Image 1: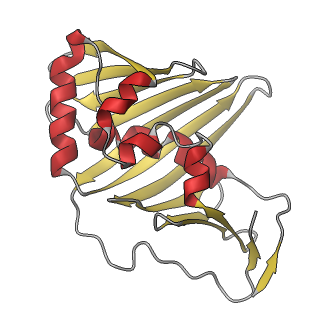
Image 2: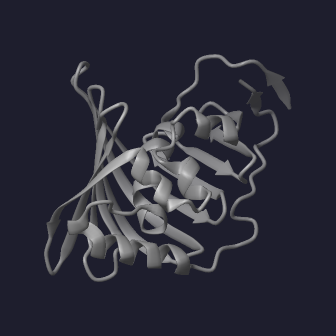
Length: 225
């Protein structure tokens, strides 16, 4: 197994971490700060306490304004508290991203390369939308970093908008009104619009002990940034 410093490599898996998982797992971590969203906040908080794991499928459309280019990503996610994560991207490239809370391993099957990164450092860069506080279970601290607004609430769906107070980027999240299971998300930031449809969402599924383990094939190139 060869080990070398990084070279050019597809980072679709990391983009998905930034855009899909934080929003799709909002039922675990997010709250609404305004008075008009108080009921949603209390229900999300209750869901956080009763949820230890989730699984779901996703179809994500990434539109780059400057390049006038659109990419569609299809895959599945497993997550288990505190920080066990598995993202399996099936299209357009085959990638598996695994985290055990210490290391983040991103394997690209098409190039037979695996990038191993420090999980803590990636969170500190702000790549993961709102994760450092939410993983620590400190929901209230999100209020100082993000503005929350309830933009729509009906018998079928509930929509929330989160805006980062420093960068100004925003994310819209749509939930099932009854269960608060995420249905879709939309992230707008610096000329990129990412829309994600979430399907087959399951709360507290029974997950295999090996779900968060991965050994790359023989001959894979290991990259350590």
